[in-house]
Length: 367
Ligand code: KQY
Image (cartoon, rainbow, N blue to C red; front, side, top):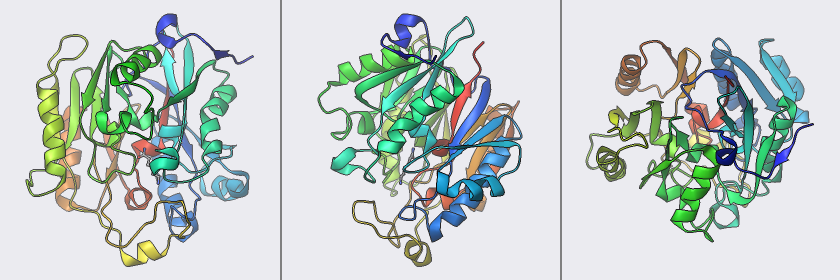
């Protein structure tokens, strides 16, 4: 029987591993909201299929899909992908799936945070979000994994990074946002992270990416590549509104050490040229009260840092930007010499407000 645990991972000797550690599988959700994905979700579904099939070359993939889209998803995906019926409100598995924690005797558990669609009634992106909030528990039950369920703490998986070695990274912009846990102090939030992802130190970057609708998720501005090694989304253009945001986070990290006392090796990963929603793209999205509109000319929070680390590969978002796509491939090839760097076109995903890391959730190998 799967148990909902009342203790904490820290008390029980569990930690959230780094994404670069071995995975058993990857979880995704099929996109279908017509007020977030254009043309009834079809172009986004094609992009999600490409992401899923690419990851499936390196590790197992499970796609969760609503009943009404089951046949469409099953038909579009190869037999390599496991397809499971699961209700949802949208398709951001990073944020709604469990955060997996492991111990050193080969056990795995889940953490089931509360989810409020990135801000609830204050600045959330849609209403309701109750089906999304049930996804983490359902995944744990399917996998027969006990889980820690938090009654009152709002957090999305994309707002935390762990190096698996005692240190987590978050942004103040997101975790201290009024729309997450305004009843808690920064110290209390930090303690919650220490207790539930098993870290000793939390690094608080000031900001995420300009106009990121998640209130600045950390997974769009930095990525841990190994303990002590990070990439940070960067721009050399001092007139770009992203510049002061990246600079502030870079300066912060340069002056910090991690839980093991290491200075960080920081690589600058240049953002692509502006990604703006076209008239045609905007017109393909249903306008529904209570959902963030997609308007022509809106700048998307485009960043190469939102890649997914699969077993033996990096699944990298590509923006059809000849200069910066190639720079990102080259830099990551240098940082990850033992992994293949596989680019996947991501325009249809970024139009929905996130990217490859946001739509995936790794299930680590318990060892
Ligand atoms: O970036 C993410 N982790 C999620 C983005 C959600 C966008 C919803 N429209």
